Image 1 (cartoon, helix red, strand yellow):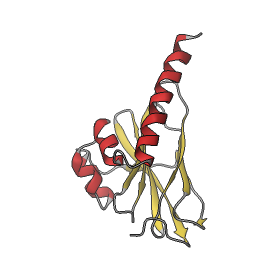
Image 2: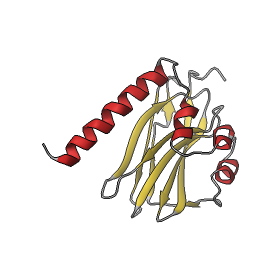
Image 3: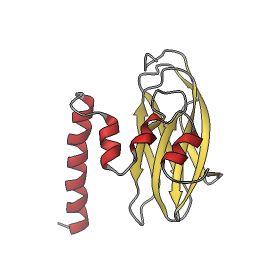
Amino acid sequence: MNQNRRTMLKASSGLTVLGLAVAAGLIKPNEVFAAAGYPEKAFGAKSLDELMKALGAGMPTESKDITVIAPDIAENGAVVPVGADSKLKNTTEVALLVANNPSMLSAQFMIPAGTDAKVNTRVKMGKSSDVYALVKADGKYYFAKKEVKVTLGGCGG
């Protein structure tokens, strides 16, 4: 078996267990982000400016090379499919942010070198909000955003 494939399978099985532990309520999502190196203040950020200060970075630059993948209208805020596609060279991280959620930082992905920077997941949204894709490429931050309207709340917030 190819060593890269073996490493990928080992990593994905660990992420599956981690995801199940979060879903079961055994650990909190912010504990997972903290383990990935995000500072504690990043989880309480209510704006992009606050989040960037918590990360120790300046404001990101808006980029047309990033696409936010999300519906215009989400019928159920409990399971909103969101994602991002970055065409920026040397993309190393992609974070998905939901501006009106209690914790703006909703998902974070580390992108291995030589990999397409396209990610997808599902998030809870309590109300209509801008969804941001925050991308780190060549050591700098970039973003794109899209408004998603929610017709049935999911966060209860």
